[in-house]
Every structure is written in structure tokens, then in C-alpha cells.
Image (cartoon, rainbow, N blue to C red; front, side):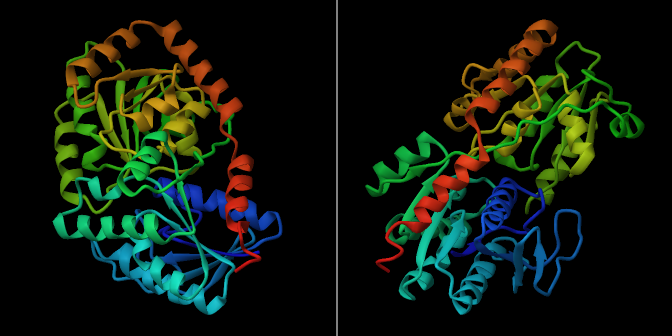
Length: 375
């Protein structure tokens, strides 16, 4: 089968959850013998590194960079149209769109008679970083996905219910997968920041308003603890907010901001954290939460359905947006080392039994193949 994937910034990167998901799907599908092409945005990544401009191969997957207007609010939209036109020229059997914004270009594929699948990773039009015009454009992509995609995939029951209520559209629930990870000792993080096993609380994710890192900073500032708070992640069209978070972090000498991390440093941060905290108001299915659980982290999240469904009974939730409730949850957890370790072990066991990339790939491929022979 010839498969095109559209919506990611850079296949193989860890800039966001979409990039992780697309990479896992594409590489695994290519290993099964499918011809997979990912159409990536041009421009620079979160580290400021320019993207390649010519097609290349990544782990058996063909990568085609497409022209992008690298401006907030326009990058996803312009790259999606350019990617769709390029994909149609390659005559794929199916085009898989990831996220609402890129689905603005989905009607081009539908009118060309190409089978389309859309994965809604979250209700992006609700994100605080988008203004009124951008939010309306993103929601138009959502309507395109609901009304025109041959198959619709969502990551949580709450979003599945949203599409049923809002559009009368049945969506397939296919949660993200994750690989159970081996814990690694602190090495580079000790050299760089003096972090050792169990000596810090970890926030890891994009520094954007809807993830509420400032709520965690406020709650942590009131705690009587010698543990440190590590804020790991880069901005995403939110440089002003990133600066505000940095200013808040500077008020507490126990807080360190380490920026965007990947590779061995990322593995060490997950493996040695006392606990991981995700205070988001809005999520799809957070990959960082899945990865923290896969490393045996005790996890604390807001009680929004997209987090609560993932964490179930293998972690702690607090009332979304309630800094006092987050403070109390952290205070109790920091005083119960055995309890934190027990919840971390339980989280890792849940991941091992319920989250499987092979199952995700198998279910997704079955949607690609539906009615394909008739088309």
C-alpha cells in the first residue's frame, strides 16, 4: 500500500506528540512492506536547526520537505496544502492527515478521489496560543475532518463523544502507543545540572499556556522541600509566554529550566525523577505522560478526561486549574516515598499491558484498507 502522512513538522524529531506518533506509525508500516512517504514542513525546528530541503530516507520512510510559510498561524496551513498537492502527484492509496489544522487541505484529496484518514490529536482550536482568526481556521479543518474524511481517528473517549455530539460523526478510538522503557542511571543530568535519582520533580512538555507550567511553579514555590523542579521543553509559537515562565522560575532557586531535550538526556530525566507533573487544561493524549509512565515515574496530572483516562488508578490527579489542590497533592506525595515508588511501578505495569504500538499500527492499517478495492 502507498501511504502519505501529512501534518508533522519533522519526522523523527521529538518536537511534539504528533511527530512521535507519525514517526512510530511510518517506520513500523514501512517495516511491514508498505511504501510510506511523510511530507514534512520546511523551516527550522525547535532547536533552530534548518530542515532539509531535498527528499531523503529515514528508517525506510521517504521524507519529502514541502514549502512552508514559517509564520505563526500559517505554517501548518500552508505546508498542508503544499504537502497535499505533492502527495497527489505521487498517487498514494491513502493520505493520513494528523491534527485539525492540516485537515483544511483534506478536501483537495477528497475531490481527487484519494482515500483520506484524519487523526484528531486534540481540539487544537481551543488552545490559548491561537487568536480568533487562527482558531476559526483550525476549526474549519476540524469540520472538514468530521464531514469529509473517509475515516476519523481520535485518542480519547471524551473527544470521541465530542464528534458524536457536535457532528453526529462516529470516530474510531485508537489511543497512542508507547514502548516500555528500561530505566537508566543519572549521568549527563548529574554532570550538567547536579540532578540525581529522586532529587527532582519533572515537568516535560512544550511551554505553552494550556499546559499550565506556571500553575506548577506557583504550587511548588509553597512547598517545604529540598527537591528541585525541572522544567523541560521548548516554546511553540509562544516565545512571549516562555519568557513569562522563565521569569517566574527565576524567583525560586530550586527551579531549573533545561530547554528542549531528547536522546539520552531525556531518558535520564524520565528515569530518575521523583515524580512527573502535567498540570494541563487541554490535551489530546499526551505522549510525555505515556513515556513517563513507561519509565516507571509516579505521575501527577490535572483531572481533565484526556489525562485521567490515561493515568486511571496508576497515579494522582488534582482539580484542573486549582493550585491549592496541586500543592496538596505534591505535599502528600513528597512525604510518601514508598507510595510514590509503588505508583510508579503500577504505571509502568499498566503501560506494558495496555499500550502497544503494534496494535495501533494494525488498527490504523485496517482503516486504510476499508473499501480501498471499491475505490
